[in-house]
Image 1 (cartoon, one colour):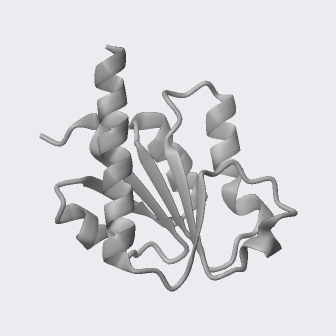
Image 2 (cartoon, rainbow, N blue to C red):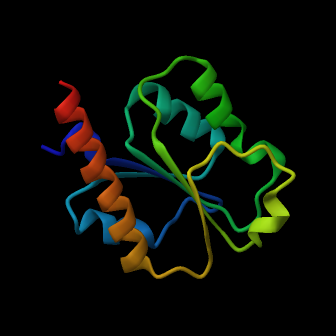
Length: 130
């Protein structure tokens, strides 16, 4: 059984992510979705410790589901990582509520390690707080 703190949601524009198999090799529970509507539904029914947004181009509405989720008073906030081909300075005008922006192309093993470390730290914090 995968611990709740090891659940990862990957949102990609085409519904596929080369990161998913790499994360699954580290015994993480990974869901991959392509539509923000699907992502919003996933966030309502399952707690994810990390959400990775694999978006070539970030459009203003593409992150709206995160705002709605946080305003709904859902469970603890997941760590949100944006993986994009856009330059970070081009995202300054958007109101992004994310923790990190990583530029494509990214090293999949390195990114998987970052995601894994995030889940471990969140699990440790949850244990300390309980």
